[in-house]
Length: 180
Image (cartoon, rainbow, N blue to C red; front, side, top):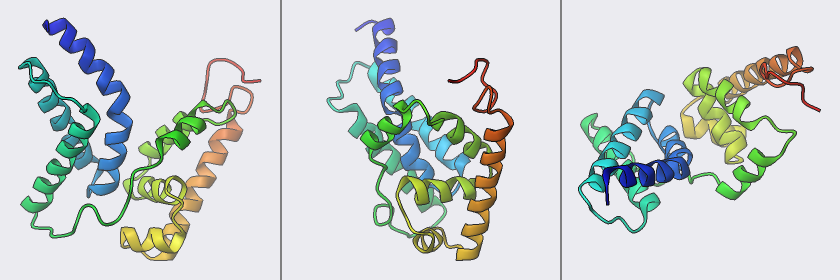
């Protein structure tokens, strides 16, 4: 396979798997930076293997396994002995796809706004709204007090509502054209 064919195939796989792998890493890692570093390493390693001509039958599975190994390496280097597979499953992709394709829902804009907020708030939203965790279970999973989870969630919701109201005519988050 030529280098250009490899690049095209890699881009196709990258586009199909990025959100899935990133969501897994952001939930399991201790920081957003760690998740992004591991994600970059996983895809770089995958691309190098593709260039070397190796056949990978199930890229999504391979990438997820690589991400798990990257997390294990990260945590073992920090001497953290927690199990990585005991707490959270990945969000149902079909449910997310239906939300993303719903015209009245600004999924990407809201997700982007949350990514720009602090890391703890982002994780709270992923667990509470993405995984249907209760506030109590979210607090326990993140090692926070319930009051902290509530206050961070309600402040972020208030901020999102304000952003939505400010741009209602050209909603959401400053789009160029009016939404009907």
